[in-house]
Image 1: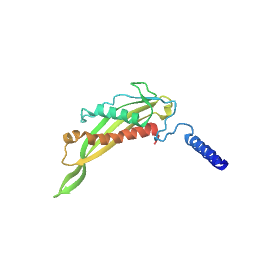
Image 2 (image 1 turned 30 degrees about the vertical axis):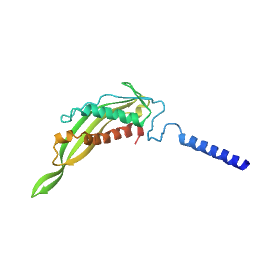
Image 3 (image 1 turned 60 degrees about the horizontal axis):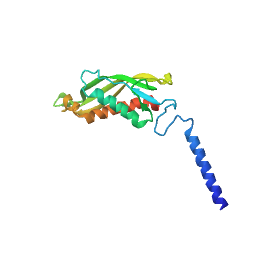
Image 4 (image 1 turned 120 degrees about the vertical axis):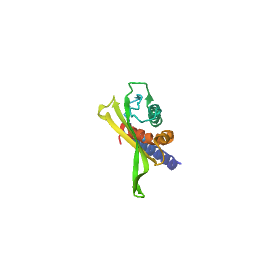
Length: 178
């Protein structure tokens, strides 16, 4: 009986030490973020679409998707303004252009078209200004050459795939330190 009790105490002590070692300084989390414990809030201002060709829904969709991503992947509280982490910026490019040029009967034709979206983000970390930055993030998606820009603009799922890549990059740069 004494041996079983000793093994149990050893396992408890080992588990405690393991948890203590994994907790480290308390900044790293298993969710992939690297957020200082002093940071509790974030704010995201409306990200306007300043690209002349972008669809009308892009401003609201991008801004709300960015907020949702941070709420799902951190324990930070969203506040209307003056968060510990602050994001603002604008959509600066929404370009639809031919890609994968190929020759068909001696004539150059687009094999596909590419939509490229660029977003300029200014990130301010009020707790550690060294982590603040201003950067342009970009992602793209390829579409059949037969699809015109109006058809692509009506495919909100396809546009969301492109903007999700940008949002993930913003998240990684600001709180995952990748």
